[in-house]
Length: 460
Ligand SMILES: Cc1cc2nc3c(=O)[nH]c(=O)nc-3n(C[C@H](O)[C@H](O)[C@H](O)COP(=O)(O)OP(=O)(O)OC[C@H]3O[C@@H](n4cnc5c(N)ncnc54)[C@H](O)[C@@H]3O)c2cc1C
Image (cartoon, rainbow, N blue to C red):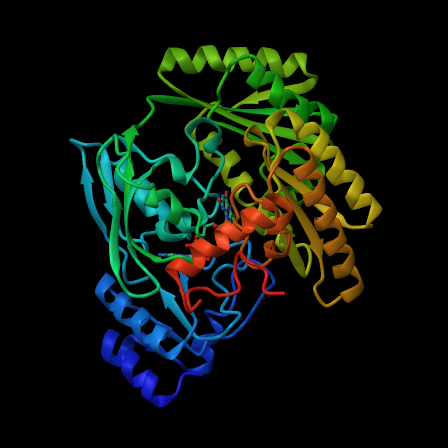
């Protein structure tokens, strides 16, 4: 699709070293964290918004697909170049441009790794809460494009609650700015939030303004151990109903605990059916009071034991165990598919029961991990993509699970996006009219459908 003339034009825009087209280089950008793969024709590494504008103008003229890519940790197939064309890598746009302590904002380029940004603001006593479990690799641009969440979103909300402004290169090559540093802004349509969660289909994000808050003074981590997963799930709404807002409320089932312990032994109890990993933060007194109240509720809901981390190191070990859950599950089978159905918090126990029943019905091994405080469930389906018959059962499982989530008033995706994997189901959530509005927005901004085609909307 990309001939020598086009390659030369790309090299002219970004420099010879920043166009990759050898087979082994293309392979490195052919996948994300799903089992999907597809080779691009070229990978380009621009370093400015102007270079990105020139690439998109060229792609529009020649009708070549362009797929933006951060770190490729997506769990819905977003950065996989399923139509070939150009992968546009943001790795060279990797500077923190400003941390503005007078306005409590920061301006970053999209290729900044989330954990590096956390460290930079925390060194100044500031805090940027969104914390996807992939934060040591994933990028701020990828987080914005996916509207990423994470454990701390229970108290602090997701990426969309922290971004106040963007610079975006439109698919047709114009560079626009949305929002800014102000606390208030109701000018015009809210374009900032149109691009957040747009999964690389509406524009390439080249600058991000986020708000910051002071770093909480103290935090406390608790591990509640349950003999019945159902009791752990019911505890979530009991804590919410008691008007306590912990920072995190993470749930793990027995299968997840077993996988973590065989990968990174942390001392999690192998005989428990479910665990809740809970963290509270705030001022010292507030943290102590919240932790005491939570202990009371958790015991009342049937926890057989509660462990309180005694040191920051102990707390970090528990979080490391939680963050390793995906790797721990992935190493135990040839293919793992992570789903993301989300329900209102009070429906978590019902949804957990649905997932267990569907796994049994379709004879599938499923580990349940959840940002339970957000009603955001991640059933990890352990399978083997070479086994076509089993994959058909996986497809039936996911379709029935999405249906159950929607019937409970939930959504297809709490944080991983629609991408390619969930595009056939979009209309289930929004109906034909709602989906048509989204398609019209896409075609206004991207009339030639060159930016990440085939994602979000099913093509057949
Ligand atoms: C182990 C593991 C744990 C995870 N945990 C979480 C979690 O807790 N919460 C959560 O929300 N997600 C989680 N994820 C999913 C994933 O990490 C997030 O979606 C993350 O935001 C993706 O960032 P990335 O830099 O890897 O983006 P990529 O995967 O490269 O891209 C994601 C999407 O964004 C688009 N994109 C990337 N950069 C830009 C840009 N500059 N402009 C426009 N579009 C762009 C791409 O085209 C693609 O559609 C996890 C993934 C893994 C593998």
